[in-house]
Length: 281
Image 1 (cartoon, helix red, strand yellow):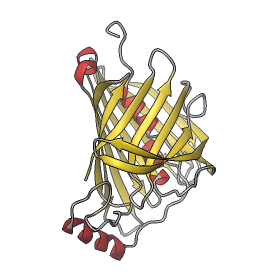
Image 2: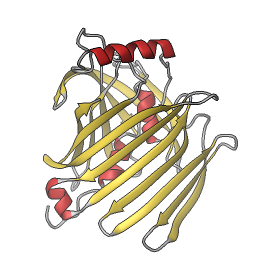
Image 3: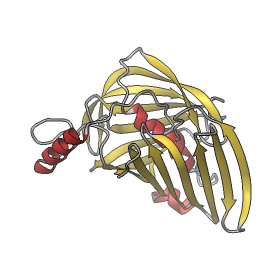
């Protein structure tokens, strides 16, 4: 392993979170306030407050993950979601921060921050990736122009102060980026055996991606033991990403719909990359 650079954790993280949208049923403001008050009054354990009532999604939250690669600790990821005040529909802001750790960090230092602004049903407005990997420092911006039905992609090398790549791709109405896709997945209630096809875009390509609810499983992670539904998202193998891989997401089978485990199985020499929930606030 020492002779081979580990995979880009940020790219892996974004790919792992790249799951498609389906439908969104947002909590009413009064209901959200009642839930927030209840959660504040009791400790949250396994996605529930002390009296056993699940905290429903969507609501403001911070989720922290441990990243494992080939059975060793590879780093940590933190995802935050915040509603934004608006007189023109619901607005959301989410941020993903990924840092390499342990032996992987000694081999290849990585620190990436990815921010997304969204409206209404988590439709992407803009994304911004600040990527520091080894000696490289890059910035990638995608603007989603829903009036024109286009996504505009710009990637820059901040060390050389040069534009590396620009692209423009057609997008469907209410297109989501990869993070918005995960948020929309959490509003879905597909039963095992059911599936759906929906569109995604990363700014360079748009694709119809299929998601399949496969089975109910009990998952034990650092944050606790959860009853979950396992989903497979078909995004690799030339759909949205060229790499050959299998992608699985485990969501709690309750109102909070926490993503407690995410795993990508890739071919040798990369193998499996797994995100497990360490803490949910």
